[in-house]
Amino acid sequence: MFLSPMTRWNNGRDEIGAVSADITAETNALPAKYFTDPEVHEMEKEKVFGQYWVYAGHETHIPDAGDYFTRTIGGKQIIVTRDGDGDVRAFYNVCAHRGSKMLDETPMTDPGSLSRITCPYHLWAYELDGSLQSTPKSFEEASLNPDLDDDAVSELDPEENGLMEVHTDAIGPLVFVNFEDKPSLSLAEQAGSMKTELEDLPLGEYEHARRYVSEVECNWKTFSGNYSECDHCQANHQDWVRGLELMDSELEVNDYHWVLHYKHREDVDDEMRIHPEHEAKFYYFWPNFTVNMYGTADGYGTYIIDPIDEGRFQLIADYYFRDADLSEEEEKFVQTSRQLQEEDFELVERQYEGLKSGALGQAQLGPNEHTVHKLHRLAQDAYNA
Image (cartoon, rainbow, N blue to C red; front, top):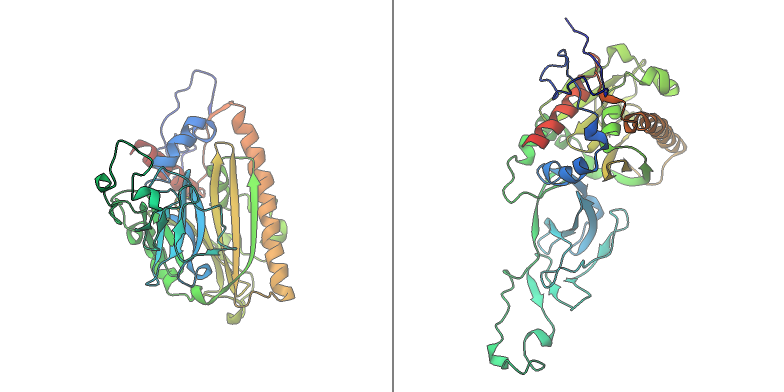
């Protein structure tokens, strides 16, 4: 039986507890301060985005050796590139000499290309495998230093003075990075059944068609919680839910991901989707990545929920179809998806306005918000690690 938990108002009398292991227990939500406190945002850079596998980008955008894009994850700037052997690798966008940022921001959808990575400050150059390739002559001799002879200048070891590499792994064409020296979880362990399910699909055969980047005034976990349930859909996404059997849909919870299975009122032609089931499947992969397998379009979408600070995040929505030149119906589908995003933006910004007031100490979750409860539990586990 589901026992109604109690909302904790911030009146100075109620004790704010940790998230309970059971959603039916009284303290079943993450305390509100974890959505609004700047110190929590700083902690998450290491405890969340520095420990787990985080989506970096789609490898089809860098098909050739030397192709690259940059990403900033948890305040860390990285270069994602394809090396001379065809492998995708990631390095900190930081020169091994004196720490300069080397490459300007380069989005995945407009990648760059280079034969080597060169720092503009003192022209240290690196191979695509990260090893030091060359330095200017001034680093090989001491002509301007009267206290040193040239033969006292040591030769720089290419590997010891190379770029700092970041662990990479992939689910099909989806590239993930991990900043830990020795990741406590492999990507396969973190992704679980999601890895197998997505790798059974021809994701790499689809072409990038659209990208939308939006800045939203709320904490990233606020939007993540909204995206993890559909109790709000009937009231706020009325155009969309007309085609769904919400009561026949399913919320599937796994260790580090959950899946929202949406059943359609009518069967859809098999050619209208990338996967065979007559449903939409929206995967949420902890901490901040979603993959949308649509039921009424032969394509899929990816969302990155990137924190900016404690009160803002950036949503990067990418759409992939059989052909980058969308048909009229496909264009309409993308615009419908965009409408849903904008409806959600209004909802979460309203929620965040309330959270910032400080009145709420700890919320309560309903019985069908167990996916949100999972999100809150994973956040708390990361904070306590």
